Length: 196
Image 1 (cartoon, helix red, strand yellow):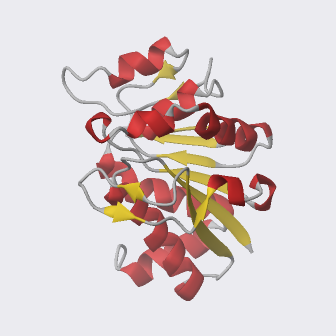
Image 2 (cartoon, rainbow, N blue to C red):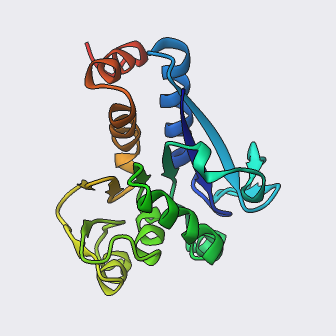
């Protein structure tokens, strides 16, 4: 069984988390049944971007990072204090640990900034939220990342980053493919109604 750590910062965007729970949930029931997703936060109760509460399955101090095979990180909003957790040393150390072990890391939208802030993307390629007059891609460049600003999704070795919430499902499916197979991912997509 491959275990995925869904790392939630306070202020995370619920849609971006739900794509991971749905894709890996469908794989557990309707796919090859080889993956398990575990939600983890820095607090016992988290506030989502849009104002409701979420209780993660575990707090970070309760788990062993070595028990997990991949890391998934949804983005969030500055107005909801997302960066307080996402840029904390405790959060960034998780990212570094997964990268040191060359384990897959999938970050949606501005979660890519946390990956960049950790230092693991320095000198490598990536992307983050892109929209006219928005500073996020410039911030990522300032963190030493070669930003591919026209790409929806960028994969550099073990790290997947993306440019908006629109990419979320594709990122989750890419992570599933990395952990299982192209054939299994296609089967899960079919069962979820995304392919004919």
